[in-house]
Image (cartoon, rainbow, N blue to C red; front, side):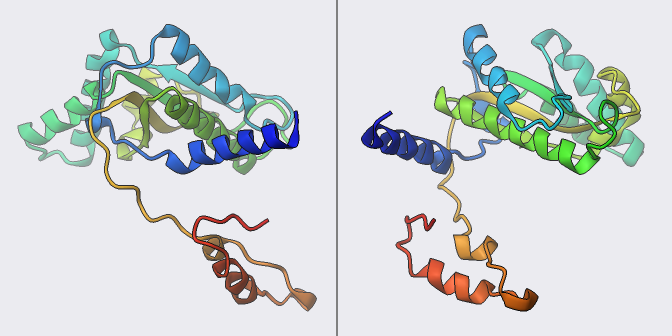
Length: 222
């Protein structure tokens, strides 16, 4: 690959990453990805870092025919937390299962396989897999979002998705066509989250921050 081609590729990737935004499930509508597109979107998860090649995560797709069962689990989880939940609140909980054309549950395998790979590293791997899915969906022109909530810890949800004692439900992934988009959020600058280790253990975040703020707003300091 020539230097010019590499720069074009890097610019495209940067544009893809910078333009991605969360589209909440209530703003996602049909059409969703077709079978081929969904295979490519989900296939991108396999490129996530995976120390030991243990695949410490899995995804469960919820087809249309099973959305009602998930809706009832949402209602059950709500009523367990709030026995006085109104019919309207129960209906709102039930409706969440039907919003996006494609709905997936992300499950982390926190134990099993190589015991030297701890839960934090496994969750990082899942996070990378999720970002790959979000970016690939975006590259195909779809909107997507990650959502969670208190129902993730309910026994009813664990039973529905056959979640083992060594696993944890982390979030739902919703994918579809964006009905509307909000203005892009203000994202943190490099100086907000990057610092430099100074001599004798003294931090020099302010110094690095000053350097980074000297860069153009759309610049990317090495």
